Image (tube, rainbow, N blue to C red):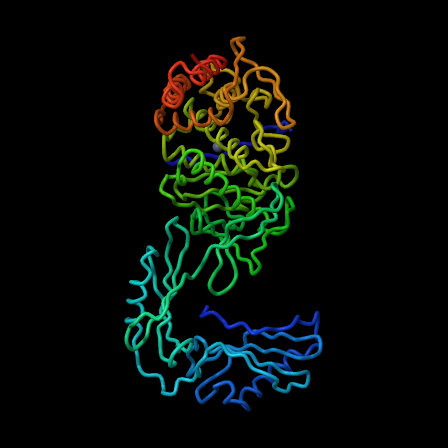
Length: 531
Ligand SMILES: [Zn+2]
């Protein structure tokens, strides 16, 4: 059975508290509001104007207008935009704008194509297969591709002719949804053009925990945006309150926006995209932390992104990683004190469970289970330090934003009332979220040293279990040592004693045997009774 590690088993008591480019018509600012009926009148006048001025618009037999947009000016002038069809087929490059005065009189026209959009002949019989085959060959970057051909009239350049516009949809380099649109001449099979069906965009996210931030999103060729990260391959979805146990990667719904502005920045928000902003951004921070600090490209080091679910369950005050689903799942908190479980260290913690599964695969019980949890706490916290956000600052408190004031802490883990500060022969009998205390305490001692210290406004006081004084070497060095220990030396059954050996091997590799760093790692382990 595949474990689905979460960041807590139970809440700690008291929580211690397209188409071708449109030639743009220049239009003046629209009126703030228009009288009812004006829009409808403008549309019917525009249709009549096109029919009366067929020569101006290249509008002939077999053609039809499809309304696209209406702009009404303050002075009553109107600008009515149409796409057109020929014998029912979309005409690429056939779009036009009818400019009318307040009385509906034609003033001017704008047309996309340099040539008449009318296809002079009737549509010959052509089959779809030729178009589809050509399109697949023209979209080599799209894997597991499915192609959907559509017959169109190509009138964007040259003599209007029949063409296949084929949408090829599949997955891109990072496992994210990706697509290409390929247009081929229906008679000759020659490629006319191809373009990405989606492209990278930067949206504005009003997050719960880190203020207003830029987020990587995807612009769809048909308009609008989705919370798909084309850089890292993550897709953030709404679980629609399905429970974690019933979720699969294909479950839920994608987030869409017409504006690429997401969320309202509030906790417990009724805007479901708000938690998605944090989950999307903080998974990206985690991905970037692993890539830029440790040279690891994604959870499996294969450059692929994961699915990230928000709004899992009802009042589910938890988050979880699932290997089976290759998904992160986040709940909405307890509905009172704990908001949505999507803050930086939480997302870092869950994605790290995926990294651990893909490397040492520490068994999720006994001492190895404690090491598994400590690893997620350590790198979750390091993501917070890496993001260097002024709202959610770096600290040695875990889940301090989504479980205020904190769920666990590193300097003296026992302050939560359950976690172990020091190793003992019975520590492996504790819940993995509490036996992790020994590892978290080691990480703090190795990073910051023993005794009292105020960091970013938070006061810590870390004891040692053997009465020694430990001098820290900074969390970046300790994290590098721990990452190498995890990915090179630890195995599924590593115990705390084994973790000491693994991290000393890693410190020796990185900084040399007997180096300051090597000695600090050893002293910190002795300080938590692991020798
Ligand atoms: Zn966990």
